[in-house]
Length: 349
Image 1: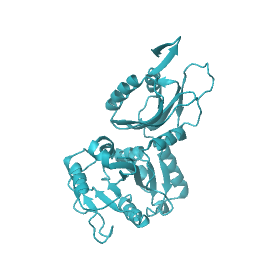
Image 2: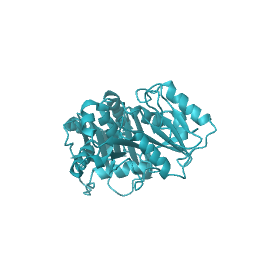
Image 3: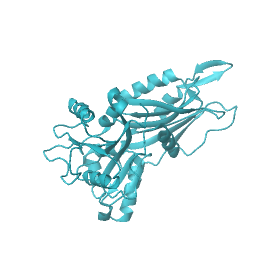
Image 4: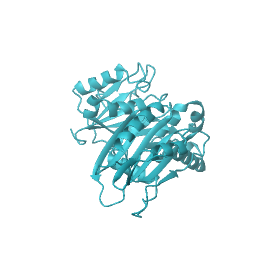
């Protein structure tokens, strides 16, 4: 099944009261040509706003008895199965996660479960924040930081309640936490002038584009230059939280076997502190240009073109907490392959 046949999924996250349900209403009102199914997951007995949809109201699948963001529990898979087995005709799935948890388990479900991957493709992860309370929530609820770190799109909502210069400050904070997020300032979650659907932020093309967005340099062109590395740091957060985006550029190629083993161990050991990884990778002996992305312990390789006569390079960006750039750079450099006198060796540091 190709991407066109798979059903796009938009995951909406954000802390309680940020405006997620208002955003859902606005999405449905704007995209009248879409047939939506909705999975709604909040604690408590009150579900989606009664004025949310449609006369029939049969396209809402609620999960009020648990948190799908804390673990991939049976409730979530049961709901997905019920959705697929129902007679509901839909061509876009909206998932509103509970506001009090990290959504990466939901993201992983749409990347890892073979049954789900065959039927669905992630369109984007949207985080809604309350301009008045965002910084306070970051202090008392670390989940808010994680929601921002994994988002593809961030909507700073309720901007009419704060001064314009403070909105600019919030944009800088978010950019420091997440280099690749598209950030919009809105009131009452108004997205009438924003394209939110069918943007496919997890596609190889999008991953490559956002990686280049972070690293605004080109590979060296000197033919005789040995593989070298540069560390490129993006905007540092102006907030005191220890979250940052760190990017690395290397000329040359990785060993596929060594990188695969390393990234598997790295993401497992750092699953609580590394929130997202994106990159463009070259592997020795392989003609394809790979794009790479990881969320928590799940990682994916994709490619859509081959290297031509250009010098091969690696660009990879990590978003996380307490990243040590020097140690991470040394680990990555050790995965490079050096060709000397027709003998291939793994680089040592």
